[in-house]
Image 1 (tube, rainbow, N blue to C red):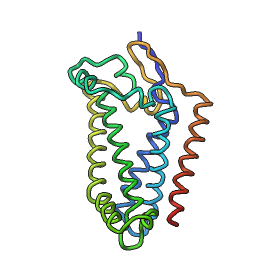
Image 2: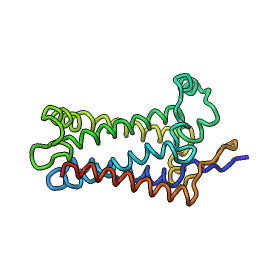
Image 3: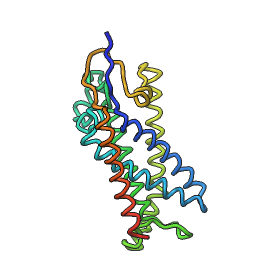
Image 4: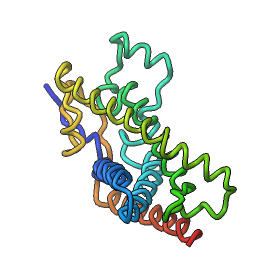
Length: 221
């Protein structure tokens, strides 16, 4: 008999889709360039705020959103690849999915950081460029434009392909739980906390993250 488990709490789901929207908007505005670069920066600040929130939510959020639930040892990854996964691997992020999540968060963080230090030498410069050397600005700009964006595109493509693989080959719909929150499992598993109090806490936490980003941006104003 299947069991319904709340895997992704509402704050995690909103974070996920908001991040998707902001990253796509950031890529589009970056390629358009010109006066639209104002929105490229704004999207970058939004991504920065979301990343800070996710890092903190990974410590205090719902059970399956916490990093502790999907930090796996190399042995766990090997066993999973050999078809000897544990029951909890089918709930939140499995070992492969966990690697994808950490890679995306890490490289998104690098892209945001270098964006804050980049200068297009035309009309727009990152808010923190006044605080570093010209050499650092040059290196950050080079990474942001020539390396970071392509790494992220590759990771996103792999992420989407993995989701489609699980949907078509393993009949495991990973998208639906990220929309509705719940997942049907063969055996009972603990649910993530997702009540009014935790949601209010998430709103406050994101507000603090956004305020911190606004303060950092204002430093170079």
